[in-house]
Length: 222
Figure 1 (tube, rainbow, N blue to C red):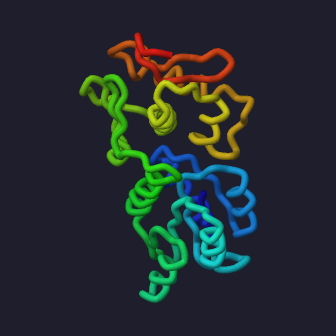
Figure 2 (cartoon, rainbow, N blue to C red):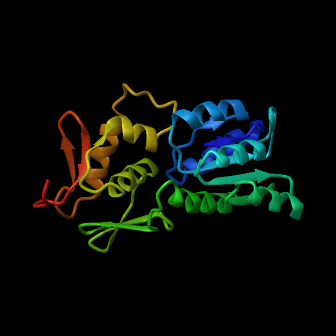
């Protein structure tokens, strides 16, 4: 989730994060973000400090007092030491000052996203597939596999839940934006492409009738 009211950054930040295979929802104020945060599950939230309906630090502080644990990065022009300390002391996990390098933003968000509600390792492995979330690389039997952003995101989600059935709805929610059409076949198309790119060994992605897909090696239990 990106909460930003600057029109140019509303375009630039989501575009940069999507290029790193992240699904991004956008809000322009605290009230809109709050509605989404109560309904959806996010791995990380990027908050501009000064928004039309207030300083987001107050919102984050209040949610932290209620036990909210989603990682937060404050992205702001408020660059004084006292501002940064304030951000950390009231619930922020990271603080990046504008103007910023896009590459640094991506790295910081990826790092925070791995924490999420449950800590995820930087390298995921299943059977002969290795996925490096930091380098954004996938190898099968040691051979580098080139994936598109959504293919990488889908594989990462499946590898984080090996041998568990994952519904198409779950994949849409975690790998696409809120604007994705739930009636489209984008999930099935992406799975087909992913299977094709992972050639060189047994098919590890199994369709589960009435449920979705799961990652499972031939001969595995279940």
